[in-house]
Image (cartoon, rainbow, N blue to C red; front, side, top):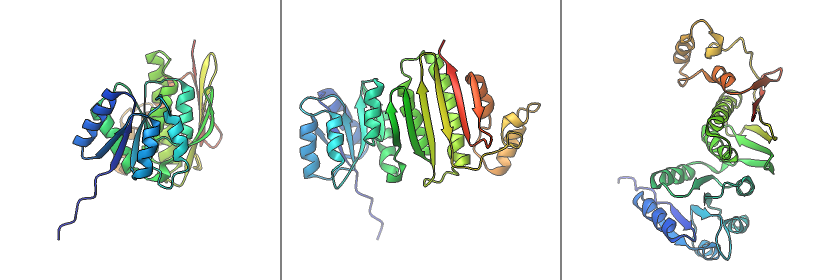
Length: 282
């Protein structure tokens, strides 16, 4: 007998905006999900008690009970669905409060149907061990613990970008590039893509600077012993690409070299398993 297709995931869309509910339901239904809707947190809790959902698409600001209130109720639930937050709120306090409650990802309004389906699909395929732990959630001092998987790293890059939404685009892009490169290096090389191991992230924002600290669980490395990186071949910009191909590594290798061009200060500890980068704001 041919194998049966797995049942479609159950998704609950919770939003007080009728258009957002409609767009989300249509897009997710066309993508093959079983979709129900609720217009506020109270109605969402009623549906969650009556039926098991795999994922909740949750607005933050709603009458009667907001999204954060729903998240608090879900802490006590026997069956805890994954949560993707819908929001137009860029306030760091709101973002961090949601992360503390183990929100998987954020989707900003107005909804892009294609992007929404992609985020929901990704959230449903990732395991529960992918949780990002919040160690400090002050807007000017954030500390996070991240499992060593590319999926968690990519998710965190998107989350951190929202903390810098008020910065000029060019500055924001420079910081995002540097953070992504150094984080993925820590996850891939320090953490060996082992989901049981974690990278610790610190983000400090002062009036005149941003500071990131990334500490991985690996033994570190020697800067003069990176044949797979462009920084080790200053006179031959493509030699490292040959090394990467021979080792079966993903294309790249320009990370550290490019990061140095994007930030104002780049500092490693003695073992080179912790790095700090600084970007000045004036």
